[in-house]
Image: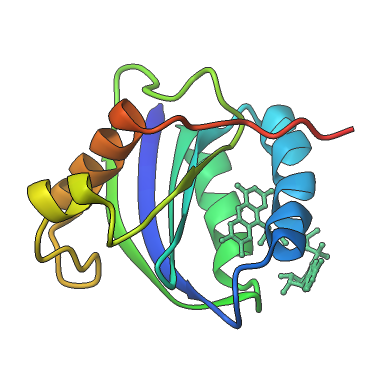
Length: 140
Ligand code: FAD
């Protein structure tokens, strides 16, 4: 059974390239092996991540991620069954999230994932991906 899961969290300390690389270097091969796909949005003092895959795989991975000391206040926003993957082409794409982004301001003026509904937070990610350019960094 396929699900997708969306959570929000706050980085402990600044989101530097080193921190991002250390996360992606592990995530991309791990997710490939577990057949988990998704997107990691970062910026504005937040992480938001969508994970898609077999329910047991996604649950196991979420438990690992939740315990990671590189972020805090990890809050589950949405978990639902899906019939097909939305981000199947990415083991873990990266999207930059900025509250100053005109699109975010226009479409989501009061954006706060901690108080938004899960569906609204997912919609924001979908909008960001549509207008932005998610990349899956090459891990050598
Ligand atoms: P280990 O590598 O043994 O690490 C154990 C703990 O040590 C971690 O929980 C962390 O607190 C700490 N740690 C590990 N490496 C570093 C480092 N370079 N700097 C500082 N502390 C460190 N993993 C995935 O596989 N897929 C994902 O999609 C994914 N997304 C993530 C998203 C976010 C926002 C964060 C913060 C982490 C993410 N991770 C992801 C990493 C995940 O939390 C685990 O660290 C990883 O899966 C390896 O698991 P492990 O049990 O082997 O942990």
